[in-house]
Length: 263
Image 1 (cartoon, rainbow, N blue to C red):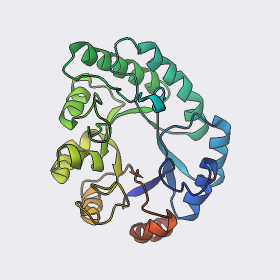
Image 2: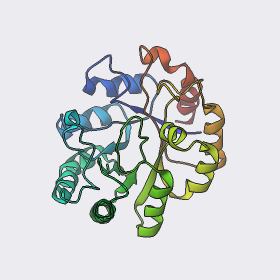
Image 3: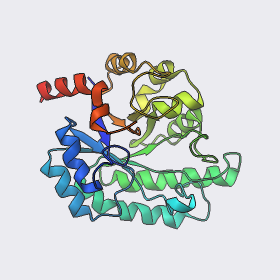
Image 4: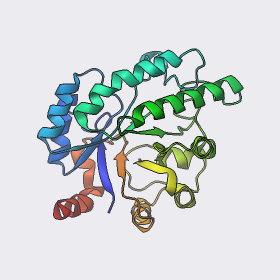
């Protein structure tokens, strides 16, 4: 059975961020993820996490000024120092939460630019080697160009090629099913092909990015497929609830019951 992690950047927005840990645990989640923790002290986040008996599945390295359109630095040739600073910034949060996976964002750059490709590979190697000393895996996530126009890493095959070519033991693919469906489709066959390099999975409906129920994708089938493939990582619920988060968790209820029985 998949292990679901509530995404606290998108879910439970009815309450302030730190209170969302309580809300997720109350709703039956055993794990959480979020985009960025950096507006709060690492100790505050760790306390809320551990008080509720939750596991931190994932969060992102600092991406720059989000409000100004920055989406990471890894593929920007003149921003390598910012990549290094973002790793240093994340380490206290990693220690406080015990997280084992961090997502390195690529930034807005042209993949046809050889300098951007070289910068990306350099950033990935340095980040993976540095975080590997802390027992942390680095995730690379392709993001669809509809949600983030101009994003460097917008192709799953390219991301898989980088991971294979660099061959670093703690470098893995973050497979967001929502992004995969929009960019390429063929979700099930891609999961089967790429499973050996997948370290984290995320879900949402397509095209609305709401609860993973209905619309284009058959999520019960995909969840069963993850079991058939032996996936034992987390499935991050990176979706925007249509309304009240708790009222929209009907899709999760059967899994929450099984999670409680397993615990």
